[in-house]
Length: 614
Ligand code: AGP
Image (cartoon, rainbow, N blue to C red):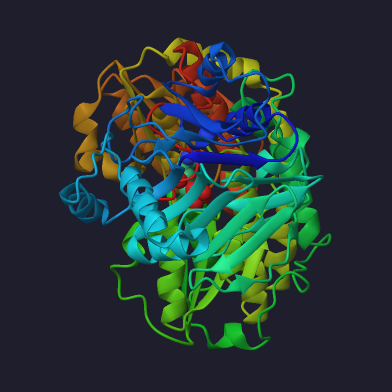
């Protein structure tokens, strides 16, 4: 959480920093601030609110005659300390020599603060960050050497941090340190930059240095130097990120989320074409597993958070349905650590994270690695921590996703996971040629079917407007549709702030049905397959309790209309692949409900795109 931007070069630092913060605002947006080196002094501007308001305040502020050539900026998602100007970053040490900003949580902040306060240092904010700032100032005063003060600081603080620092008496430098929270550094054309998210740097360069755990960096106009936490210099290779900066642009759309929903057919085409041919999987170049490995595996674990977890659940269902000799499960990352996950050679764990920076998923992957479990990662961000830490890392080819609510990365993950499942089962000798051809053919037909659903947006919008005054929503489905109910409900919670629950349809009468009345809308997912009749019985039970019913059904199933108040139709698919298609109307429905209610769709309250704290 929190977005960081730093710049040192010859251009106007404030423009570069404000642009970079605007691009990373989805990471946190309750307050924002920057510090600019203006001649001899460093001036800070902070606000409670959005980057656009910070920009206005910076423009109105007196920063002196010459444009600042270095500075650091921050957009915050509060953890320690309320949302106030004082708690906004950057923070300044009491001696005025250190200006510091931070992403993460410093766990021993209280202890450090108590010690420094006992020495007479007066703190002004309630943040954990200020303890690092005041401590660094003290360490620097004591030793007079930046690198040594930085290494001592990093050894003294526990928890997660990406720190970016200006020293008042070192005008040509910005210093950074990273443990646990992401930080990317770049040098281009007489300038050095740093940011939390690579998309903020793509206007300047695509050659990026992803800082590793336990690294310190020194940025100057002439380049970037790297050190370990032991102070020893480190050689680092840059990674070329292929993303285009216009991919992270809203274009003619009102919201990133809406644009990203529309991008799904293309994203799926790229993903499917990269890993399959007409009738078979082809992951030989991308998946580097020993050929016999899968034959020795008895347990497969899919592990992720939030929407990525629902993608994991889809993959889990698919794998289990095709191979009854495997023990397959999906876990949320934050709980995985408490389970007896097994040890060693017979277990394969697959970690899924759009950002590749989700703290819980990273911890889960580290635990699995430490137990000798075979690991595969799926992430959307090349160079992200998960991508670098897991040897077998596959990229979902969704391009940058900016809307806080995941859309195109979900379908990219589901497509890639489905192909991966087929490949793994094929390596195991557990995939029939018929199933392979049927599912690959089915996958290849999904982009056009998604396009068909997108072309029906106006019907879905009309329903969203009609039902937006519901007091809440229940999403119900069975088997492959259960993860879809969870995703449909999560989208509504996230961006419309409406109570929305998801249930396996058979569970309704074990309690939740008590809540139904004429103001609680049921969205029932009823594709035309072997479960249609069972689903319709559950729908009838809900209707008998006066709940308005919206059905998600298959094109041509006209008979289903009599069971519902309204129906959204989607083309027929292979039953296992229905989540890839069925999610699109649910995304559009949530989007238009949120829009009708006037919500802040791309930056919903209390959330941040990338959850880098546990
Ligand atoms: C999805 O709409 C959410 N914003 C959230 O649940 C997200 O999927 C979750 O935080 C996991 O993120 P990751 O994929 O980057 O690990």
